Image (cartoon, rainbow, N blue to C red; front, side, top):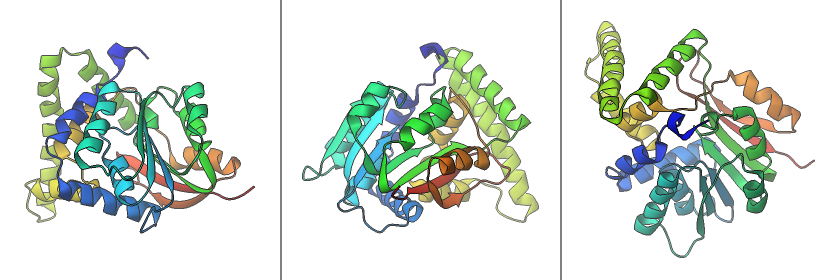
Length: 272
């Protein structure tokens, strides 16, 4: 995958940092505890593969973990370094490295972790199956492997791929307009659906829910979703079955049904 065909995830995250506050950090911590089923990460090593803004690396550190963050995008690395400087704890280890989960030399150098976390990342590598396999190998025995992967919607996913390809083919100054057009079309559909259910058609309630979901931003999620290349999708069984064959046990699963977005998986790795 060429750089021209790769979405600038890190630049989008740099924009997101302007809106980051303690409330968003608290929501990220709540989300992480709920996903993992753990109240604290004291004494655990947390490996964030594709750390993006660094928000969940920060959340893990605040929950007591020793953290190592990896991202392919130099701007995402810079975001994580900025968060570590602004909000991190000097008393707890938080290492940040630039690199790819597909780099076998880098991955070998990282060792293993009690929690390997990769939310909405491995489907952007251009080699999703290999990336999942390599990431899973970093999970210690009795550890957790947490990932979120785009749901396969069939034809709808193929249409979204085309939307993303158009975004990345446009000159930079037109990309904002494309996001407004696509997001605006869907937000209008959502508003009509809310109105049909006798709800307030304005999107503010849903946008607040997005903030409370993972501390994220509706606008930056739209930009990420419309522009994000590379782009691969998977049905739940395409994730679960290969990892079960590697000896992992599925502990938690949250799906989006037949809709768009990410299915979330938490696997444990029992002793062999």
